[in-house]
Image 1 (cartoon, rainbow, N blue to C red):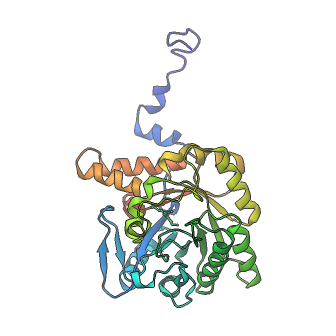
Image 2 (image 1 turned 90 degrees about the vertical axis):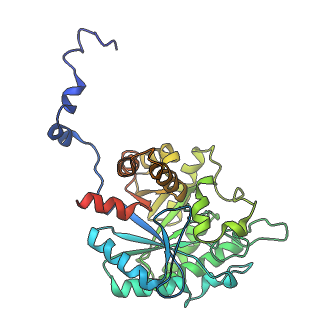
Image 3 (image 1 turned 60 degrees about the horizontal axis):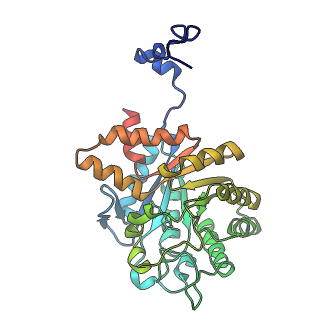
Length: 335
Ligand code: PBG
């Protein structure tokens, strides 16, 4: 098409629809709402205890008593779910991560307290071993350091059941072991937890954007120079993401996730187009850190880039976003 094409221009002037706010409002294709957000939070033991995460300005690990007012604000703003991540005391971390199975562990206690105080707030938990292992991997390792699959899945099943017993609304296996969704679904059904939802981290990439999160849960030092390439996906692949999603749905996932977010919007779009199921994106710690750092330097406008980045997920097909910006964005939307 040429600009001066006699048939198109000036019959078509796309700028007509952009001329004023009321027309832009009328033709807008996507809108953000506080209902689109899942707010990931870091919890640790203690009382009146908060420690900042240096690489995530504005994010703190909180003790349960300090988390309650945060949960209350989620309810008030209409943010439907909290996602819990534990920062476990170092002496509880072991080679096999067995603290993850403790029905009286930190996460089950936090689930119970949240569901008692705020029954109308959804609580989601990560199912993975990395906050609990002394080596920072998401699974059991053999003598060569290889991450064992089936043995790890058994532990993940136990962890998911401990969360379900405590009353969690949704478990989110983030480990990328093969077959774990089916094993967890079978166990939940067998124990009568027929309503527990599973959001599968289906297309989870071996990404360098998780760095600040690993600081927050204290796994980065333990992980050292090793990586997660033998279970998380190769950032070069997208067909493989569709195969992973197909498997997780067949095994019993209710919702699927693509992670990280902004660098993987193409994967998100393909997943949504192909499967048309509730599909979520995780705007991960490194994405949050980038935007915070640039705006702290005065290089980017904080609120505008935050909202634009979140809207991009909706445009790319997401039904919702796990984001550390959830509260800030919801407050802006409520204004
Ligand atoms: C652990 C887990 C990770 C994240 C969520 N669950 C880190 C990892 O896989 O190493 C990353 C979240 C983020 O970076 O914000 N299973």
